[in-house]
Image (cartoon, rainbow, N blue to C red; front, side):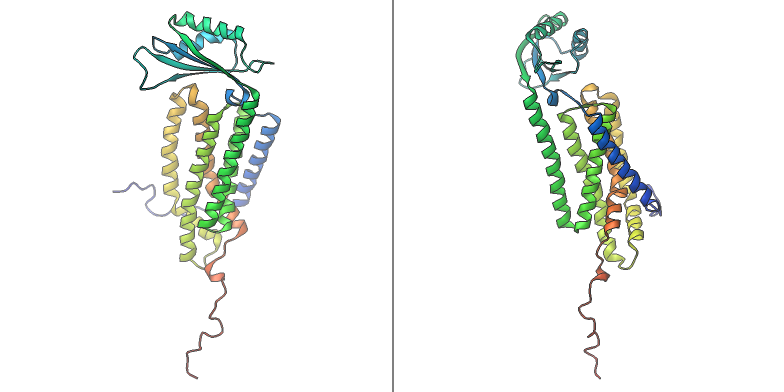
Length: 322
């Protein structure tokens, strides 16, 4: 027995206010770009530069105690992550501490590192520091450039894939929706000043993959309906397609959001930015699959089978005896 949200295919008019929804999307994209340019992003250590300290202790890592010992030093953005490896011995407990570059400095000074080591030794006298390394602003700038290239390349690859599988109107609509999702995600990170790290880039690529999957499912059904209903108006055909796939869209997005909300609530500070980005991306991605991708296809139009010239026109009675 299958789970069904609707006893029959619903008949919601998703495109009755298509001009309003498209206008709101354009305004949201422009506002996000303005926020990005004016407010800027709160870059984390990955993009801003800083120092990474690897610690090793005989007792278990207590992230809360480590953070509490470092808070009085007012070091700014500090990330503490416990490292797990099957090759570690039972008394080998490793953590990675990342500290942002201080004002006017490319990395944390030796004096500050000494203060950090003393503070952590007050928590665990067995702690040692086998590795201390710094990441300068030049490397961070290269990471930003690489991240932009990764996102742009993924959008270009998807544009080409959709173009091959469907028609060029579909590929333009799909990429417009993906660009909408990415820009709105960057915009909300800028407005809320959530830390923007390499994990956030991974979240953006995840959003692109999730959103295009939902868009392709609806596009695939639309292509079937274009063959099935050759003279039905395109707007009505779009509505029918979205309604036919609505149950799948709600269940997929709903179950994904349940897991993401649990991670957002209970996952802790280390993954909160990553999970928030994906949660926001699922919401705007579901919206854009209908109200951006399909609106763009509606505006561009689709070549229908019945609109193609009939090669037999004028000689359809050629086999009839006079």
